[in-house]
Image 1 (cartoon, rainbow, N blue to C red):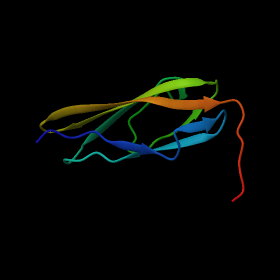
Image 2: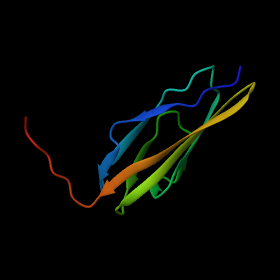
Image 3: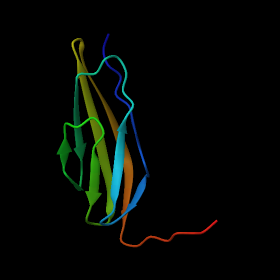
Length: 91
């Protein structure tokens, strides 16, 4: 059965210089992960759960292609925001 690519992030917006964690949520016995982080550092990763830093403001795309013995599948995410300032509220 083909894998199904899936992931989540610790945040959909990040302050410049801060890290964002990407968490694999793919299914069907995945054997390889190929991430692409537009504007991120690193720009690519083969780790299952990479951590990425953004150094410039903007809206960035992220994609994950997963592979298993039956083939591959890709998920695209089109709205990760990197901001040059962050406001935190105490609750």
